[in-house]
Amino acid sequence: MKSLYHFLVRVPKVTKDTIEINGEEMYLDTKWDEFKHRTMEGEVVALPAKFDTNVKVGDIMYFHHHVVLGGNHMMMNEETVQLEETKKRGQFINPDDDIYVVHYGGNLDPISCQAYAYKCQDTGEIELISDWIFITPEPEEEQEETIKSDIIELIPKANPPKEKKGYIRWSSPKLKELQLNPGDKVLIRKNSSYEMEVNGEKLWRTYLQSIHGKIEEV
Image 1 (spheres, helix red, strand yellow):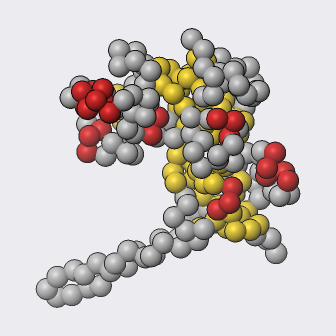
Image 2 (spheres, helix red, strand yellow):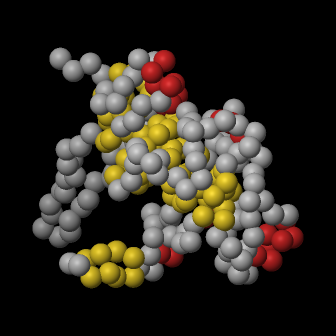
Image 3 (cartoon, one colour):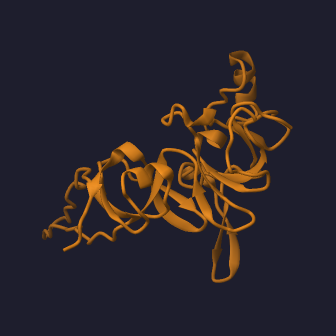
């Protein structure tokens, strides 16, 4: 199979519906929290012929959740309506297979680029391929308080969103231009800390322009 502008990936299961507890595999009903259990990785089966990337067929790609759980932008409206009845979702090539389209377009429009990083099958290293980056969250202190009463227990409102701090996980050419390196502590704008699991790590995925600046440790 060939592709002109985008990556094609194989995703056999679009949600992570199992969990291991005390060595036993348990099944989850993902419909109650589908967003949390979405699959955002898959095996690359075709490369964008229009663009030169270091990605190879067989590498593991990490991508946006719309690839498997969003509306199907590859189909016409009438066909999409018909597929709603089968509960098939995402940017699949054919409803009978497990190949999905990951929008790339040469990263010319980073906001629309759904391909974030890949794991090289030869080295096991994670490489970034767009303007999106990953941040290791800085541990936050517990600030939850309860107000006691003889009649009821009052729980205060959740704290409003705020800027967050974390550490750059992997490098990229754009980060090097900004003189930012893995391990550097940065401040990112509020509502930009989208949690995503990459190679077994729970990280924040954020856009390069969401970095306010580097925090110098004294």
